[in-house]
Image (cartoon, rainbow, N blue to C red; front, top):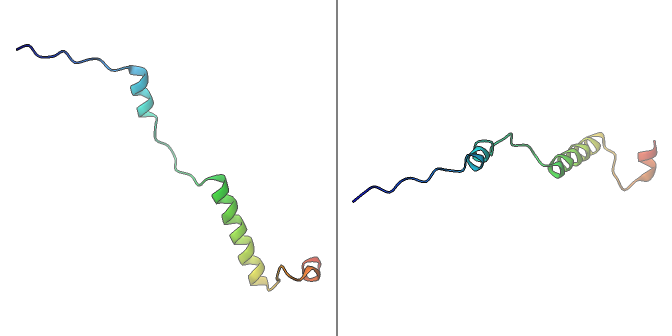
Length: 58
């Protein structure tokens, strides 16, 4: 019984597999949420609440 001949792969498709990886970054929404959290922590640490508009203007 003869061996089956192996089919050659598409070189373009194989090339895409090589470049599939990359740097894992946070999404824009995750970065924005983190900035909001840090701002809230800073405001709470300073002792200024969001409920008092006169304190924010000072």
